Image (cartoon, rainbow, N blue to C red; front, top):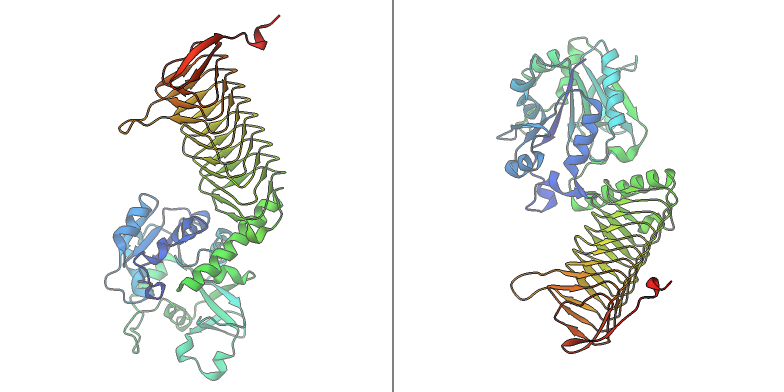
Length: 454
């Protein structure tokens, strides 16, 4: 069967007290609408439709080509919102799934089960419900003796007896498409609020003598909707638990999952250990058997195997295997550390490549540089890459020894096997196997590398 989802995202979200549209507030590194879209894409066959309203331009810009959009203006209730998609979908689908964009914990598997229930249902509607002591403002689900749903009674009109009902309407539906489009035009306007509610389709179906089925959800957390910043924090915590649990089941050790923050796109290999206060953001990929943290922040970076990263910050960087860095090291965008590199405390690398076996001492800055294998960068070394207008490159060969507090004034090339004395200010290229000292540095000796000896 062809199935399409309609995602309701037109609400203003005034209780968020924000200039940002509610559905664009982030959960685990992605806008909450991204999570809702992922769930519906896992459970339907066609491109989804998103109903937009407040902040429509921002939401549409974020959605791009991932969904079709329709505008609900003015906002006259959930039934009216779904009706806006009629011109796009009528006659093109067998089933229509409807859910809310502010429920980012709802799983695709849950919606898939709902679709399967409707495929077997002789009636026009299947819906999601939950049994809970805290009603959270949800409508009460009233069932017939045969177990089918008779009505959804909203909290503000429920009788005292109905308020005792613990089965609640979650807000996820799967409709027979042909029936839905006719039913939407039969929904009466609510006399109290002047709006058209999608929940009234249940009463229309029962009046027609048709079956309404309900799937009772097991996981109460999936039903949490977001209306305030407090709800946002509640959902964020639940999503973090879900993400860390998945990684741990896949072989990742976390010393304290509650203090470990991992966003949804992060990939982590087995036998990696995450220490407390580790933050993994964006499209970070981490290999196997690494030890990361404590107190480490990594964003959009790639890490090989068996690396040790202590109390450091990485952004847009790459580590090959067996790298040891920190504490208090920083890799900025474009930093690439080859295998077996050792980077000490309070070092910074930007847009540079450190080849295999390089040792970079503490309190050093390397920017716009290429450093050859087995070179030693002494403490306090700085590549002076910026002349006030442009950035310039520094090239350092293999087996080089850069003395402490050396200033390397780019553009500059240091040959293989060269050495600089402590405190040297190097302004001119240095030939292979040459020792330079002073300010400005001058060549004083030709060297013979140990690696050249027979």
